[in-house]
Image 1 (cartoon, rainbow, N blue to C red):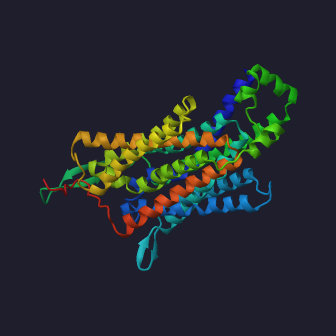
Image 2: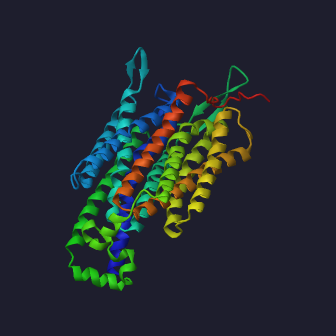
Length: 439
């Protein structure tokens, strides 16, 4: 029971620690309907955010190069993680205080403080993939899945906070001077500044959870070795992942380490896994977020809000499924990727046809766009968790490559979409309470 209690506590701490990895960027996305009403960029802001998040990849690039060229043991992942937490906490504080300030740039107003602080938060999130994830190698494989559950919570918690805030509510009121109607945006229950203070609290919980993990690991390392062996026998010997609930590299058997060193990482299967991982993250973190407003808003603000909330709930749900069912088949992973691509293609088609997609002003159209977003993010989130778990078996460097490929895919997707959205304006959005489509 002692081992079970320790394992349960470790799962909870790992999940809360993982929650801090992407909670900042997810909060920025969820709060968009509120901030676009105040910031001069308007609904072009998603494209700006996508590019800023992409440029946040300078963090993982620097860390990856440091791992490549620094001597073994020259980089302390715990200190890197603490630095990321400090940067994110400070950025969240300044965002809550200065998010709506404007600056004149080349004769036009721009929300420079918001964009700068969004970049710093994105820098922390992007760098977390090549620091938080490799750090999880010192834990058994099952805790990697708990970490991805935490990443799913990093999307769910901001959505729950946004629900309490009442984001994106509007009603169409008849125009006194004409036959049309004008949008009236309902007042939120609390301001964007208060929401960003909520973001600060999420980041603080993650930082405190990591501090407890470090403390808990120290306690486990100090336990007598015979006590660990006794608990290992109690949990069915060496086959139990819970035998060493906070396994560190020092606790691994020398012959196991030698075997892991001899194993070649760059096999066709591992390359295949990394390709799937890169493509799925290009879609989920770069391509589709840039056009989510275009695919959803023609069906109404409620459709957009439901799509964001339910797709983010699908993320941790998929991680829970991966805890029970882990697909190891290469063919099966390819089928999962294909399902995600099909639903992603449908959403891209809706965005391209905006502001007049099919089934407009029809309940079936709203249901299809919401379900498509939910399935799209759900299946590709499951794919990411499975690949992360499989790469954990290949060693610490495999998890480092896992994080790097996640960021590379996100960057590629963002760079492809930014000129299409913000320079060439290939996607058009409709206006609230106005039907601009021919009958």
